[in-house]
Image (cartoon, rainbow, N blue to C red; front, side, top):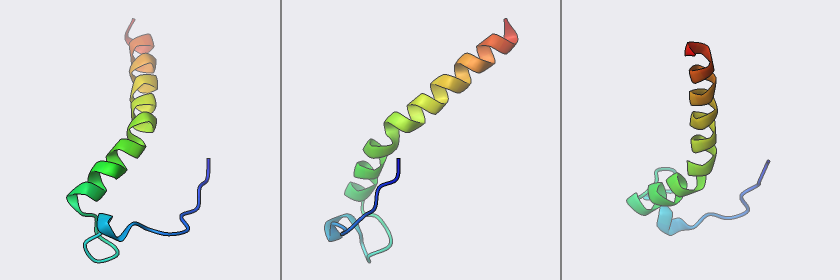
Length: 51
């Protein structure tokens, strides 16, 4: 899925480039489902290889 950012929440950035603590929290929450799926798939694949 491709999404385009049309504006940024300036409260999530310290200088327009680097995230604040809140910015990292929002970012982490947004990528967590994708990362979890990748980890799950890799764990399943590795379990198949060792059994």
